[in-house]
Image (cartoon, rainbow, N blue to C red; front, side, top):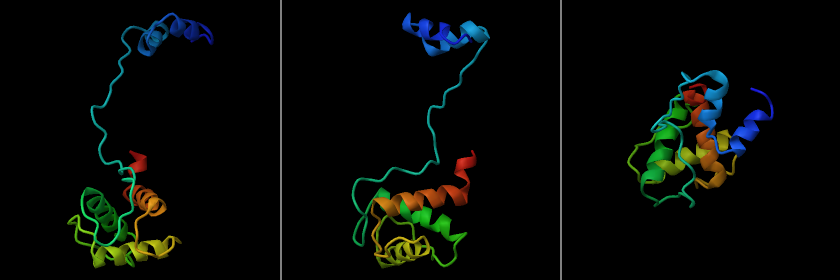
Length: 127
C-alpha cells in the first residue's frame, strides 16, 4: 500500500475492506465474530460486599474459584450469586495475597485485579 493513496481512498468514501481489496486483491476475506465469549466482565459500577446478589457476584465467585486452582490459600466458594461470609473470606484472602486492602469488598481495584489474575491463570490472553 502506498502511504498516502489509502488515505485519499478513505477520504473518497471507500470502506476499509474496499481499500484493502484494492491493494491486496478482491479475494481478500475478512471474518468477523458474532460474539466474543470468555472475556471477563467490566466492573458493574458498584461495590460488591456481603449481602450483594446477582450476576456480578456469580462472576466474581467463578473467577475466584478458577484463581484458587493456582493459589490454594484462596478457598473455593459456592457459585450461587450470593455474596455471603464464604465469598467475603475468599475475597479478603485474594486481597491479602495480591497486596490490596483486605476489606472483603469487591471495589473497582479489586474487581480488575481479580479479572487480571483470572485471565492470567486461565490463559485467556493467549487465545
